[in-house]
Length: 402
Ligand SMILES: Nc1ncnc2c1ncn2[C@@H]1O[C@H](COP(=O)(O)OP(=O)(O)OP(=O)(O)O)[C@@H](O)[C@H]1O
Ligand SMILES: [Mg+2]
Image (cartoon, rainbow, N blue to C red):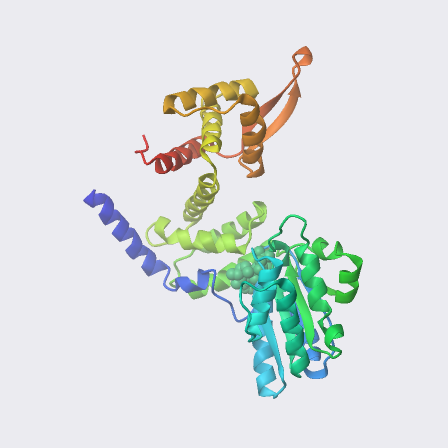
């Protein structure tokens, strides 16, 4: 036990000597400059400057895949906008809100609060909105309203939050009969804006600014820039960084994942160096953590079905159909004294849940005159999955993993 503990201490010591400035790899770090984004940053800044100095309203939709610098770009814009407004004594302010996991009402509430309005969480949507409109009537200030991650707005049944938000924000100027706001929206997917209802789309009348994906060389350059800030000189081999850039591209990951791998790397380093082998090991650690997170989100029946499939795959079965899988599931339930669900429920509902999490795939096949069945396949390594499920079940049932 003490040996194991000692090992942990030594690993952490090594880590601190290699990764000297971990903050540069953290989620919250905002770089002061975006590489390979000069044109896009210039474009959003130009429209914002026209709004600041000349009250020209151009509403913008920034879109592009995950991890390509959209959030960093608009946060930089917010900062620069506000600094410039103060320096040039212009009565205008940029406000940033991320709509991720917020309802439409909550997003309006957050905007109102940033405007300094005395709103509370119990207020109805119409009342919050009227307070915003009245504020715009009573002052001469102009606001650049930046709403990030509008595609992650929380949707309630019968609710079109993006449509409602876009419509209400883009109509403020008309309501108050002066130029009061310009709206900047950020999303992964431009379709969400293209699919807006006609009234919302036409009052927004957006300019689209696309942030494209990086190529391998660009990814490498961005990683290198960050590594130089975060790691002790000479501790990260160039080939290791090239490998990481190639993996991001090949596995359709993004820079955020790359930074995660780099954060795990020092604990896996050999002789104080991050090599290609270190990167592979760190990737395994990160992937296992991600997998564990997904698996931890399953309920007991999901865990048991996944376990059954992992065991069958591990035993070398190539053709795992519904009945074979269900038999194994029942067997495991039996061993754990757990009441199994019906076959229909397990195969259709629980199977679908596992598939939607990307853990398994199902393929329907015909059994001739015996009807149809499904063939199940595990998408991840069987042994890894089995071990993780066992850990999660042990935590869930508060028993020792064995
Ligand atoms: N061009 C770049 N130069 C330096 N760092 C970058 C660049 N692009 C992205 N990053 C870094 O990559 C990470 C992800 O960037 P960001 O959060 O801006 O992505 P995003 O486009 O908003 O993604 P999402 O769509 O998932 O919200 C951040 O840590 C950011 O600092
Ligand atoms: Mg973002």
